[in-house]
Structure formats: C-alpha cells, structure tokens
Length: 237
Image (tube, rainbow, N blue to C red; front, side, top):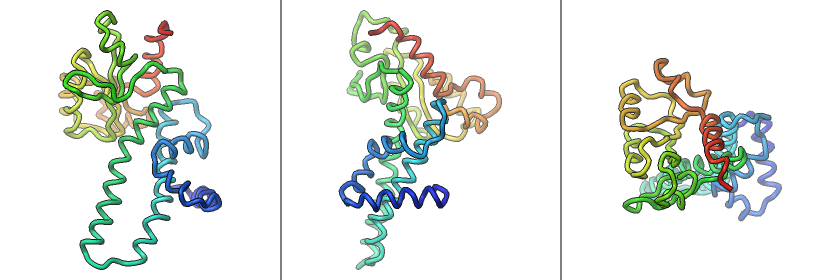
C-alpha cells in the first residue's frame, strides 16, 4: 500500500469526488490504469519501471475502493456462514480475475506510449484460440504473403507455474513465442523446459535477479522487447 500520505491523498480524492458511481468505475481496470499512468508515478521513461510502479498504484487504488464497498457489508454482519463464504469468494475471485486483465491493459498502454503501435489483442487464430497479443496485427497473421519470420506473439501471465504450457498452441505459425510474466523466478529445470518448447521469457528488469544466474542473460526485458518490435515494424505505415 501507499505510505500514509499518498494513501490519504487518494482516499481524499476518491471521497471528495464522491459520486458513488465514479468510485465504482475504478473497479474497471482500464480506468484505474489511466489514473495510475498520470498520478503518483515515478519520473521514469523505463517501461520496466513504469509497469511495476503503475501496476502497484492501480492495485492500491483498487484496494481502497474495494474497502469502501466491502467494509460496509462486513460491518452489517452475516446471517449464516454460507453468506460470509459467498462474500469472501466473491472478493477473492474479483481480485484474481482482474489481475491478468489489468496486466494486459498496462502493457497495451505502455506499448502505445513507447511507439509500438502495431499489434492486435485477443485476435482469433487456429482453433479459435485468442493469444493476448499478436504482432504486427491479426490481419498480418492471416495474410499468406506476410513473412512468417516477422510475426510475434506475446502471452501475458502474472505467474507461470504449469500454466505456461497453455500458450504453446495459441499461434501455430509462430514457432518461438514470448511470455511476459511477473513471476519471481523459475527453477532451472522449468526454464530449460520452456526454452526447449520455444518460449522466450519477458520479465521486468528488476526481477531478473530472482532467476537462476545461469539464465539471466537469456531473459528479455520489457524495454528490449518493445525496442526490438518497434524496429522490426518501423516500415509499416
């Protein structure tokens, strides 16, 4: 959470704007992200730093708004254990479901901000699969004349664990896929399995030290990913 002063500032802003509907809208990740991109953000042009800082700000805003909504319900009490469990599950599920979408939206904002404008989100590929990001576009992916070697796919997962295998068949034309994650390290054995399966990890630079030393040089930063693709698609109007 924010240190006391910033937390108090945000709470004061939310309450002073006091339309309940406006506070409710901040549950939508896109609006919280827009707010985070323009408030309480370090003066940095590094997309790796920007992502982590903005995501932290946006989540703190979400928690403050969530408390305003949920605390009143808790204070009223519950008629049964089932009612309590239903609320707890609702809060937990909302947090989980918004985490992934929030991360995708932060990336989308940063891509555009840093000049990477050629991409499609949730495009349909083989078998009705929907990769998180296709580069340079869904149209290029399905264009038989577009060079296959210039296609890229980025999957987004807050953590890898065993779920990384889900991305392997999301874009059959792309043999090496990129996976952006905030997971703080994987085992050497898991990393090797991912690499052998054609997965290249994109990880914020400050998290690289959490990975085995033997693989750190192979990790890609978000800044490097953006720079590589911006150059690759520089000639696309």
